[in-house]
Amino acid sequence: MKRPFGIRLAGCVYATNDEDLSEEEFSNAFIEFIEEKGWYFGGGLYQIDEEGNVIPDNE
Image (spheres, rainbow, N blue to C red):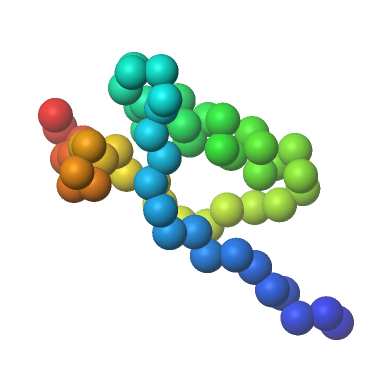
């Protein structure tokens, strides 16, 4: 059997249209992309501010 090579993601995504990008909007588009390719994603997504700090879910 072939070894299961994968990709680890590390980075930030920001919208370029001066609008906030919500975690829900991004995750829906990201998961749709992943599933269309027949891939799967294991991990987490977090909303961050312009400095890269995680924004708690209750804000």
